[in-house]
Image (cartoon, rainbow over all chains, first blue to last red; front, side):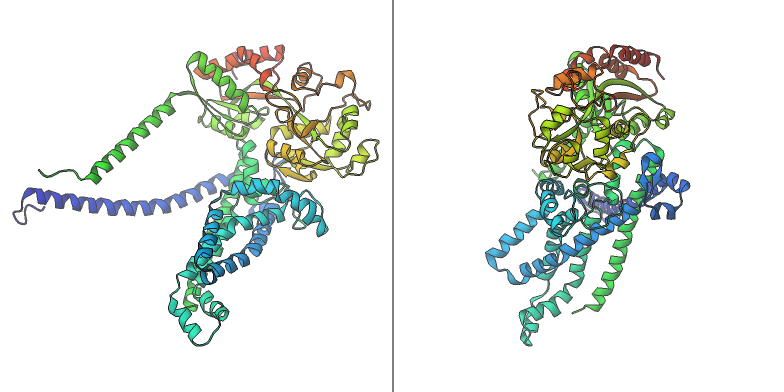
Length: 312
Length: 326
């Protein structure tokens, strides 16, 4: 107690007491919040796992992952088409989006000057803030007819314009702004000495960017791409609106398909009350969580390695 | 005189106090909803209208949300809500868990084509029989020129529903005929593409001249006037399969005419289907009173909202069911 050490006026003692109490409370509060976050993740995974047990007791894991017949009404739960569809969409999207994102980020960080830079980067931030359902709506009216009437026939496949390619195109538009903002930020955060010394030994601007800046900002750009990947992987509303919802193995980029999130979103509305189907859908959720978590974990490891290798 | 309180702590105090009072309000609001309803989006508009009327008469508060039939059923079985709205009859598995349902009204879907369909006139004159529709929806017939005797060469585009839809399921029952039914999955896989909602399907059919699909009649006829005003048109059903639409089969001009025909049994069920209100075990207290009202006075308002009321016999059955419980 404060009073026992030396006589001070009581008001001051009370103030110190109050400060100490606040200190103790706040540190415990912060620690509690941290543990709570971890506990929440564990609880979610456990809940999903527990709820998926009915399905897994009925069919083996290999059976549901490798068979391609999905018809809840007939108790057939094969996840292969949705898994393939998810990989397909994610791969195509990253293929289209990543180069554009990196090049735009370089332009914004290194080439754009003054007013142009402000306008371009604020535009991209606005794009990143648009809710994806709006992209989905616009795509239904614009992109779907375009793909169905011109693009698909041009490469010799038919269809309605709904399908994997359309989803990937729209998802690329949805995620690139994020990747651009983050990549540009990590480029801009690099110290100017890097640029100066590289230019000073006679490298051109492009050589500087290619061999110095991109390496130095590498881990940051890598994280940006991974974040984009995570968003595409878990995208729900855009694929649900545009993919065509047929649970079959897609045979071309213009074929309709299904992704894991759309499987959940399309079927949960009618079937939550049937135990086995509910269990199947929750198992899909568990798969999504596990895959994303594994991905983030490996990304962290890779990033640490990169940071060690690409030091400047 | 020194101020004991800083401005900041006064602000903090008001912040905390208002949060607490807000929370108090919210819990009060939550408590004041006497009847909580959730479930299928098909019957949702009608139930909302009923609840509004009932609220004014009886001073009872409702809390209504959509989400789908399955969501309503699982909510009601977990005692989250008092009543579930269902777009289909309950499954045996659900009844085993204690679900108890009574019918409330009849809803129906029709086959729809674009207003500029190349063979629209022939379709309206001759209709399509069930067998022809089955052939079209299963992609056996793929060209509008094959459907009618006309010099037309346009590929048929079939749209389906990708989301779980009771209407689409019933459509599969109807297309399959007497002893055979397509599951929703079968139809989805046979279609050219699927959209996740009635509105999206209507939009797609309305923007593609060669498309055919199915829609709830509230998307076909204008909500206020009950006339055919949008970009989609119903395809008359040729019930007796004689290749023309007779006097008996001609009732697609206005919503009112169509509903009368469904009422009189001139349009088959399926695709017409009953919708249900369900509870966990017996209906209780306010929920019971509301459902009882729906099955008596509430039936008068069904027509003006684009649904078909239950037939008298079925209505009596429902009222008895409600009284006796499961």
